[in-house]
Amino acid sequence: MHDDVQGIYLLFKNGKRPSILDIYRFTKLYPSISVSFDPGKEPAPGLVASGARPDEEWMTEHDTASWLELLSDGLTFDIIGLAPGDYSSFPTVAHSFDFDRNQINKFEHAIRLNPGAHVSGAEGAIPVLKTLLGLARNLIQRFEQIEAVVWPPSGSVIGRRFFESTVSVYLEGGAFPALGLIAFQEALDGGLQSVGLAHIIGQELRIEPDLASDKVVATRLAVRLINQLILTGTVDRREDLVSPDGRIIHLEPSGNARFVRVLSE
Image (cartoon, rainbow, N blue to C red):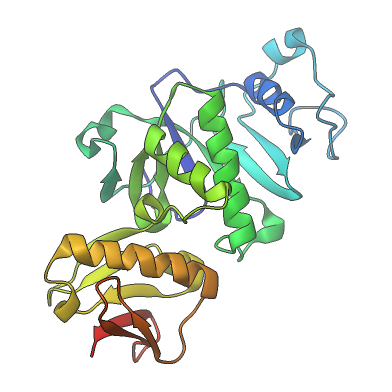
């Protein structure tokens, strides 16, 4: 495993990764998804219509190329680590959601979805993020052998069912899937801090100790606030809000602007 915060990783039991041909078949199921570049196909490069497929004999003789470029909703993504080529190693994880983190050492083989070069630097932008999540969700629905997802910005491994259900809600207009894409850790002073929100808005959320004595309640508050911050973005001045229990709380940037501090009156 290695430390890399780009893209999203789909974990497979060893020997169960999809092939290039499997991904070609996958794209047939979704009109908005096509193969835009295949490094092992001639002529190259160029957009490939979703209906244009090499025959299975050609694919059987395909070399060890392990990636394709996919076009989804006008954005390109590299899918890396396809069989029979080398698998994609995934980053270390510190948090787990609906998955036994002690079991992760049983998994070595992963494929990686990575935003294309044309969106470099905008990986956390909502249109890019939403398309990436949708592509990962569709792959999970198509390939039952996917066991879990690793999301590097939060250092999290997320069970397939939890990821599929929460992302589907988001794609259908519901709440952002904060649990999983964002993790939480206790600070030395007893506060609660997010891990991974900065990938999207450039700041992490910090629930100050006076509001974080009950970590379950504090996490619920954090999830509510994250859903708002995903919509409104960076906090650069003090804002007053009413918490779910009726208290007035304040949001303000920290001195170094790296955190959104949440304080009570």
